[in-house]
Length: 81
Image (cartoon, rainbow, N blue to C red; front, side, top):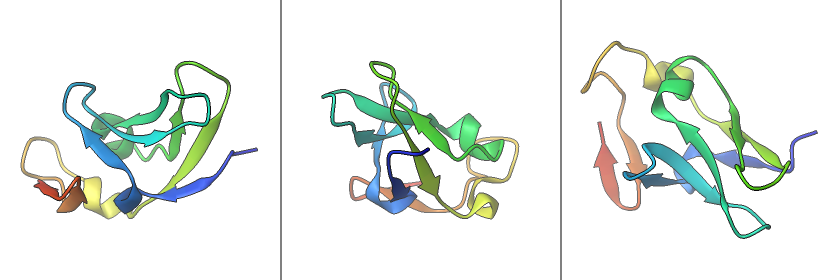
């Protein structure tokens, strides 16, 4: 069972990780990559513990084959496209 359900808009884009992140109670970060979102994945996992969250998002926002084909998503006040 998922630890929580989190809207993609509530997650932060981490350029270094190339993933959307959300704070985990263990102190690390749940992570889900752009590629995983494009593939329809909805589970963000924490690399330090067994917890995971369900990410709520519109898969159509992440369709496309290359840069610039992803729909507008706000992360950390920056428009990611």
